[in-house]
Amino acid sequence: MQLPEATNFIEQIINEELEAGKFESVGNNIKVRFPPEPNGYLHIGHIKAMCINFGVKERYHGTLNLRMDDTNPAKEDYEYVDSIVEAVKWLGFEYDKLVFASDYYDRLYEIAEKYILDGNAYVCDLSAEEITATRGTLTEPGTPSPYRGRSIEENLKLFREMKAGKYPDGARTLRAKIDMSSPNVNMRDPVIYRIAHVSHYRTKDKWCIYPMYDFAHPVSDAIEGITHSLCSLEFENHRPLYNWFVEKAGFKAPLPRQIEFARLNITNTLMSKRYLKKLVDEGFVRGWDDPRMPTIMGLKNRGVPPEALKKFCADVGVAKAYSVVSSAQLDSCIRDDLNENAERAMAVLNPIKLTVTNYSGEEEVDFETNPVKGVGARKIKFTGSVYIDGDDFSLDPPPKYKRLQKGGTVRLKSAYIVRCDEVKLGKDGKVEELLCTYFPETRSGSSEHSDIKAKGVIQWVDAKYGHDAEIRRYEPLLKDEEYPDQDYAERLNAASEKILFGKAEPRLWECDENTPFQLIRTGYYKKFTEDGKLVLSEIVSLKDNFNK
Image (cartoon, rainbow, N blue to C red; front, side, top):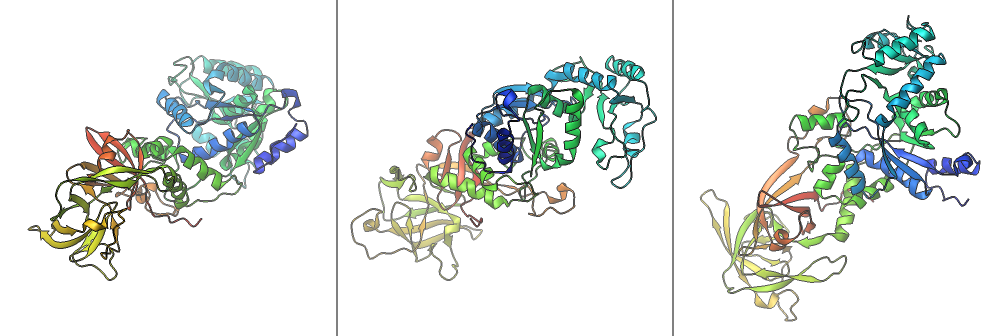
């Protein structure tokens, strides 16, 4: 068969196995899975895992199961299942089948009994704390459980009584019988089943014992005929245990192979569902889809294009070694996509009234929609009474100041050059209004010659036709770029959201919900309405700090 050229070490391994004929018995069908636990919303770190797994499916014309690894009923819910399915579809990935680990509870129980019958598992009465205390250290072996020598008959009886609900939570566990002196601590008789009288969101109260992840995950892979279990690097030390569970269950070759890759770590970014849930529960953010959240739904709500996220993961690449990626690289990918595809518009975040005293009536001026794509211009109303941004005027300008000052000139984007003749101040000393003169011969696109020059070009919003707008600007949730050994709460940025009240041109009110724009000289924003008001939510700034 013609194999695709390997683009990373995972594909190189798959190619070598295919060439060796490892999968001939299954028609050389490469089968992978994406197996999140439905205990929270997926975050940007999961996108890398998705890109790798779905990428293998596409390059090898294989199949992929989207599997919910739902073995912890106390924390799982349909809300999270729905959010995961929505996230996968929003990113443009297509899976072949949606499955659940809980689909296999009966089969997993049968396999656990097989372990007992084969002498590979036993019921243990030690508490969770006692099991931890007897597990040993990296340099010292563990201490065997006093219940390790129970007979097969007694173990089978006790395990069935556990299933029947005879014992309270924590009274007993089923443990694998492997090697308490193994240098790999994960192999020191890990727990396979624990008692938990908790209703499962799918199976309800059918079960009061639940399989542990380290057991259910590899066996579910084998049940589904997965050929490659692609997972992040923290599971590398679990690989011998993964193989043990599959082999002892008696599955036929080819058995699934676990391959680990480095997970995605980004500066200034909280990458833990547990901590992200805490931010939601404590009200630090509006919800899982808050635009500041690194969740996929948060990124979607922020207005980040899905293709930019996939491009970012492709640029980061697939590696074996731990590394931290700059958040500036992510912003750069988002910015590149929006620069090419987003329509241009004008808004002012800190409005100051500017009145052209020698202008009357109104007219339409041509505003370029997207200079990158060259899609032409649209018409904008100009009445001579406009708002400009407060940052574009100075009463005491620094040297080489190129924006508006008293006696100075500036071009209103796509309109005219104006000169500031008078500044009206309020009682608090702040600028209330600028009275200006315009020069008719300086209209943008005009063929008339003018000796009037302006060094700066600024955005504006017409006072008659513009709309009030709430502008939301964002900073990272974490203040520092590094990963100091301290509680994440000490690193939270209390000023991660800043709300301003400005003015926006009519196009921003009239367009469809969630349309992204480049607000010229300001940043990339998404438009939406909330309680009947116009909201402009920042996607990413204009300034690119990433060295490509």
